[in-house]
Length: 143
Length: 462
Ligand code: HEM
Ligand code: HEM
Ligand SMILES: [Fe+2]
Image 1: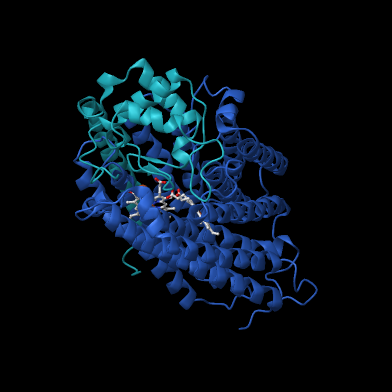
Image 2: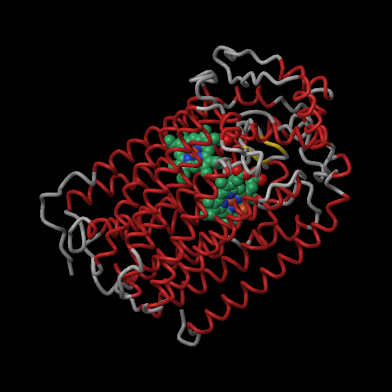
C-alpha cells in the first residue's frame, strides 16, 4: 500500500467504521424488535406452544431437521410441516408411528415415546411456527 | 522459543489435533448415514453424531486459538505470561469438561442429558451449535474469562503491538457474543434472531480478527517484512471485516420472521464481505513475495498462503454464491449451505490454527526454527491431501445442492425431500470418498510429527 496511506489512517477507519456500523446494526435490530409483534405470531404463544418448543429443544430435533431453513439438512423442513402433513393430527400420527429400530436401509426418525400431551404440544409448536410471517419461504410445500 | 511460558501452548495444540481427529471420524459417520440411513441406528442417531462433529470442531478451534495466544502474546509483549499455572489449570478444566460433554452426548439420550444437567433451570440446549448443557456453557465462560485475564494482563503490562491488540479485541468479542447463547426466549423468532449474534458475529466478525492477527504474526516472523507494513494491512482488513460483516448479519434475517428490509441490508452488506477475504489473499502473497529472508519452515509459509486462499474461496466465493436474497430464497438450508460451511470453516479457521501450529510446534519441541526436511515434506503432503479433499467435498455438496434446489424447490412438479435425497445419493457417496481422502491427509499430518525427528533441522536457504 502507498506511503500516503498511513497506519494511523487505517486504524481510524477500523475504529470509526466499527463503531458506526455497529450502532447502525443496533438501530436496525431495535427497529426489528419493535415491529416483530406484527410478524412473529406471538399472539399464539400458548402454554402448549412453549412446552412444545422445550420438547423440540430437549430432543434436539434441529440435529436432523431444518426449522425455517436453519438446522441440519438430513431430514425435511418443518416450518411448514403443519401444511404438508395436513394439520396437527398428521404431525402427531407421524411422530407416534416411528418404528423403534428404524426402517432397514433408510434414514429413520427415532421413536421418542411421547405422551399424548407431549405430542399435542409439539404439534402446537409446529402450527405456531408455520404461522410466522416468513416472507413466503419456503418456495413450495415440499420445503 | 524466547520465553519459557510459551510452552503452555503445546498441550493446547496437541489437544486440538486430537479433537480434530475425533471430529473427522464423526464426519465420516455422518457421511455414511447420509447414504446408508440405518448405519448405527438407533445407537448413534444422526443428530447425536452431528453434535459431536460440530461441537468438537468448535472446541478444537478454541483450543487452537488459545494455544496461539499463549504462544504469540509473550513473544509480542516481550515478557513472560502472567500466569502459566492458570493457563495449565484451564487447559485441564476445558479438556475434561469437553470430554464429559461429548461422552454425555454419546452415552445418554439427549433428553436425559438435558434433565440430568438441569436444563429447565436455564434452558439453553437443543439449538444448533449451542447443544452443550448449560453447565458446560458456564464452564466455557469461566475458562474464557480466566484466559482473557491471563492474556490481557500480559498484553497490558508488556509491549503493545497491533497484533496483540487486534487479537485481544477478537478474543474479547468472542467471549462477549457467546453470552447470547444464554438468551433463549420462548418466541422462536427472537430466539433465532439472537442466535445469530453468536454464530454469525463469531465467524464473520470477531473470529476474523483472531484470524487476521495470527496470520499477521506468522507473516512477520517468516517473511521478515517490516512490521509497520503488515500492521497497516491488518488494520484495513479487519476494518473492512467489521464494516461489512456486522450489518451483513442481515443475510440470515430473510426468512425467519424478521422484517423484509433485511433483504436489502443483508444482501448489500454481505455481498461486500468477500472484500476483506480478498484483501487477505493479496496481503499474504504480497508479503511472501517481498520477503527479506528464506525462512526454513516452508510448511508454515505454505499453510499461511493456503489459509489466505482457501478462506477467500470458502467464505468469500462460496459465501457470495448464496448470499443475495433472491438466490438465498431457493438455496436456504440446502446442501449448498453445507458446502459453504465446510470450505469456509476449513479455509479460514482450521487452516489458521494449523498455520500457527506449523510455525510454533518445531520451537515448542526444541528446534530452533523448523523441522527436518523429511518431516516438512510429509506435512506439505498432508496440506495438499486435506485441502484438495475439502475442495472436492465442497464441489460434490454443491452439485447435490443445485440438484436438490432444482428438484425440490423449482419447476412444475416439486418432489418431496426424501425422494430428492435418494436421487442425489451418488454425490453423497462421492463426498464420503473425498472424506476418506481427508482422513488420509489428517493421518499423514499426524505422522509428520513422528518422522524425521532425528534428522537435522532444515536450514535457511538464503
Ligand atoms: C471427512 C470429512 C467430513 C465429512 C464426511 C463431513 C460430513 C458432514 C455432514 C454429513 C454434516 C451434516 C450435514 C447436515 O446437517 O445434514 C456435517 C456438518 C458440518 N461439518 Fe462436516 N464433514 C467432514 C469434515 C468437516 C470438516 C473438516 C469441517 C471443518 C472445517 C466440517 C465442518 C462442519 C460444519 C461447520 C457442519 C455444519 C454445517 C452447517 O450447519 O451448514 N466438517 N459434516
Ligand atoms: C470464515 C467465514 C465463514 C464461515 C466459517 C461460515 C460458515 C457458515 C456456516 C457453518 C453456515 C451454516 C449455518 C447454519 O447451520 O445455519 C453459514 C451460512 C451462511 N453463510 Fe457463511 N461462513 C463464513 C463467511 C461467509 C461470508 C463471507 C458470506 C457471504 C459472502 C457467507 C454467507 C452465508 C450465508 C448467506 C449463509 C446462510 C445459508 C442459508 O441460508 O442456508 N458466509 N456460513
Ligand atoms: Fe453469516
